[in-house]
Image 1: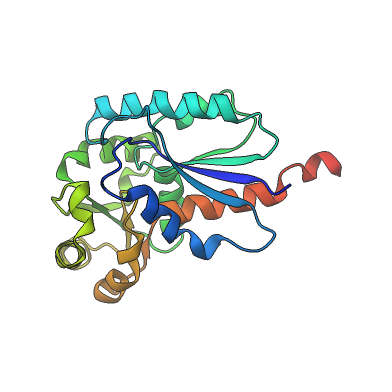
Image 2 (image 1 turned 120 degrees about the horizontal axis):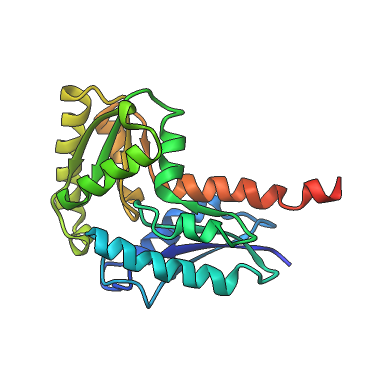
Length: 228
């Protein structure tokens, strides 16, 4: 039976279309014979994740879901689709299946494409959490700059406005801050990635695609050591 990679939207807010956008963005990673990639909204998560308190509440929802699911035979891996990686470390303490956060995975993949990292967030309020995450992963010295779209997640459904803001902040990160790779510090922005890469002239990484790509590899090789 094919295994499932669960991609968890830790916010319970459903009017933003984030979970649906995640599923569409991951379509290129689905293939015949491969694991199912299942995107879920955690109904017991906070109504949006914009503060440390929200992230802490999301961590509980994430850990509870993984605790209830990680022993299922069909469960292959879990991807937490929130850039602050809520609940990832807690779940790794008990899960028998691998758990990936899009923040850590995004940094890992982005820094294979460039030396100086530019983070593109949705709201300016996330900058403190993103700096804390960089410190936690020992990556502060690789940061070129932080920029935000100054938008609410509900406004991500307005492509023209998002595209204009992305182009502005990307040019600033590359031209003024010296970033040679950009990373979305949020889930649900992949549909803008290709166009932004053309405008910015540097690689642009979507962290959810990065995390699921790593999860695919982990799932493919799961159990092979025991069989050797």
